Image 1 (cartoon, rainbow, N blue to C red):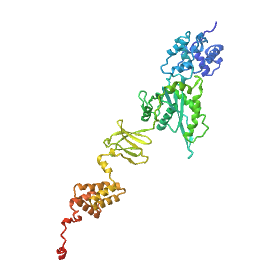
Image 2: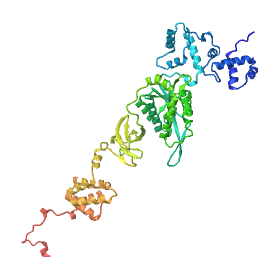
Image 3: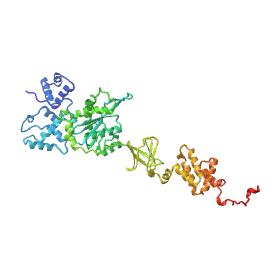
Length: 512
């Protein structure tokens, strides 16, 4: 009697022992109690179906049986042709396209074609044979997956000979697997943002979602349900009108598309450049670009089309337009306003409105500007000072008293002092010259000028003359001289109080 067909469990054992353990057909037959001919038949059917070990994930017994033992309906029939599953898979990636719609279109062309259940079952079986990177269904233009390659490439500093490892940024579109790669100096935030800006420019548009890993430049607080994004990264996403959807921690299947793209980039790009020496990132990226274009133009065996072809038909028509200008990298910093209404950014101090003293503000720092925000509202903007330990102060941020003080200069102080008397001008000039910087004496001079509110100018001038004589240099000394009347001895006589001068009047000297 003919031997009955083995169960799918026993057939899985045959495939495992052959492809995983490497046993011979005779050894497999002996181990499982089967005939050698039966083992050879099952292995031949597995090879014809393109199966190996391990079997594709999700391939159940019914699908495995369809692959190993196709029924009569799989025989070519002009009235009942088998659909081109690669085309079906591409069409399903388009927005709004369903299996039911594709089956209805198939039956419209072939009224005697197969039923819907057969259609879905055989399509699932076909998907079980293709590589894992093709199993996920991605809508065109919806997602781009991004990551860094674990392998690096060396760059030699031509001046010092120092060798540094450059990182390779890799991105892959979900529907077409269209790939982008760029060498950067590090995985830091500025290089991470620059790589995204270059990626959007290369794609010529913006996908709806970006799926990164949980590196620090992207996610500052990993969480399955509410990840905390880096503020600069989130701002860049808002500028381009896309969303950031980080993969779950330790869930590489969430970004399987880019995991495969990274492996392909390592083999197709880095391996081909391994024997070349590069002296700059620009030189390295110039060498990467033609290899990248060649990779995207290469026909993929499972699809019968290149990544570039699939990108042009699936992804490109559904991308959002690019903004007029590329995003400019900006770093955010949290700061508290000091009592002098300034905040510190890279060892420089920038002013904010004085009514925000001791308030927390956010500084947005680019290579050219420093913008300061309080509760989401911009309250100050300055050109960035390239120096160190300098102050950048806007007059409108100062209190009125400070603003008046800031408007004084050495010349203006001396001119104002001269109006009170020559000794006042002389005293102010000496005070400013005695200090390392004239500005350090402004406060003392302004204090002397303010005494005009309480004392006559001639008394202030006399007090300054006495202060110069005794080498006093403070406002307190001038005020003390005035209050104690010590200025009287230095007063110039009032012309109205001078004795009458006449040749007939002898005067006091005559009696001496």
